[in-house]
Structure formats: C-alpha cells, structure tokens
Amino acid sequence: MRKTLKYASLFFLAASLFTGCQKDDYALGDLSAPTNLVIDTQIVGQDGANPNGDGSGKVDITITADNAMTYKIAYNDVTDLTAPLSFSNVAGGVVTKKFTSVGLHTYRITVIAYGRGGSSSTATTEVTVVSNFAPAPEIVTALTNDSSKTWVVDKLVPGHFGVGPWAGEITPIWWSAAPNEKEACCPCFYTSTFTFTKVSASAYSIQSTTPGGAFTKTGALASIPGIPASGDEGCYAYGGGSSAFSFIPASSGIAASAPSTQTSILLSGTTTFIGYGALQREYEIMVINADYMYLRVQGTETGNAWYLKLKPAP
Image (cartoon, rainbow, N blue to C red; front, side, top):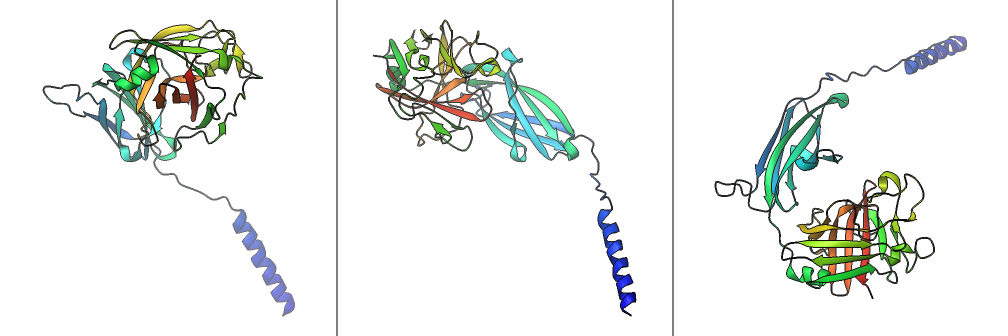
C-alpha cells in the first residue's frame, strides 16, 4: 500500500510540474487601430461679434473615437510647425486649453488615439483664437522701472537657483542652491546681467549680457545658439543678445495663492535668456517687487521646473 501511494504521489507531482510548465496563451483581441477619430473645438466666448473668442484664449476640446482606450494631445502655432511636439494625456477625451500668445493666432492640434496593444490613429485640426492680455502696471514698473532696469541672480540668497518637478509641485524640492554655491565652478552665473526695457506702452525688450560667458548645459539642452555639442554644465563663451519679450498669462495653471502673479515673461527668438541657458522661453513671475524677482520656468530636460531669484544690479 505504501508503494502504491508513493507511485501515486510521484504521478501527481509530475502532472503538476507538466501543467505548471505549459505556456500560457493570452488573447489580446482585435488590434486594429481606433477609427472615426474626431476632434471637436469650441472657442470660449465665441459669438457673432467675437468669432475668435472672448480674449481669454481658452478652447474646450472634446475627442471621440471608436475603440480608443486613451488619448494624447499636442499643440503647435502654425507659424512654427517644425517645433517639437510635447504630448500630454487627455483624461476622458475632454480638455480645456488656454492659448497664451497675445493677439490672434492659429494653432494646429494633434491628437493620437490609442487602442488595444498600442495600436493608434492620429488626427489634426486647426483653431484660430485671440488672447488679450495686459500685465498689471505694478509688474511692469517693478521689472522695468517704466524705462529700463538691470537684474542679476541674487547669489547670497538661499535657493537663488533650484529644481523640482514641473507637475505636482511648486517648490524646488529636488535641489536648492546654497548662497554663492556656483561661484567656484560657474562664476558667470553671477556676473551675467539681464536688462528689461519698456520700449512703448505695449512693446518690451531684454538684453542678456554675459561678460564671463553663459551658464548652461550643452548640446540639445542648451536654449541659446553657439554652445558646444557636448560637455559638462558650466560657463561657455557667449556674446549675449537682445530680443523682444512680451507679457502673457502664465500657462502653468498655478494658483495665485502659490504665490504666483499668474503673469509670465515670454522671450522671442533664441538669443536671450534669464539666468540659465538651458531653459524654455516662458518665465512665470511668482513674486516681484522693486527689489526682488522670483521666477519659475520649464527646463529643456523633460519634467523639470527651475527656479531663479534675482535682484536689481548694483
């Protein structure tokens, strides 16, 4: 009897091992791409008298498709369709986009609809919308002295430079500079100056002056021209530059209580920068007064928000 039980146990063990080693078959179902992808746009405030909206720049976007599981969306001004697209998720296929370039602009909206197994379909549409924006007079006065005013990075203040995540945080939780921290490696960070000029009631310019070079990353991460294709972060020869800039409503969505002035400086072209030459062109003014300016700006590295504290140049 013992021998029979022993053989029976071995049989069931072998059967169990055989079953456990069998290859699982999974069926993904239909892998065809989503169909009937439609992008519907409604410009906020649009009516017969305001065909391009109420000046807020807001557009309600609804995306539908058959057999779609998720959507991603990106935007381009049609005057620069070569600019890289930055896609974001659209929960439920519904999003409100606030276009912040001042004046009347046409934008191309690109949507990717994803189905089972990563199958996808793409569609585009264009919308022409107006954004009317005037900065608070006190911001203009603090920044330009209603004429011209020069600023420098305030190297003696803790956190004069810092980095954190672009989404979900409004402080430099990843790293924050100690006073004078970059003096040893990158003194140009503290000698570069940035002069903001009020040219007229609605026109402004900036002069970036870099006597010791520009503090920046290299290659594709540099936001200014003429920087080497490779190398460590540091000071690199740069002749400075001048360009126009405009005030726009901040695109981050950060609440005024953050604090934020909900106003951004948008630089034109690529020859100018503020503080660090590896940043995008929109600098949100978190705080500003006659003696202090605190900026938040998206880095050229995906997902980074950089913070800068400046003071009037002596």
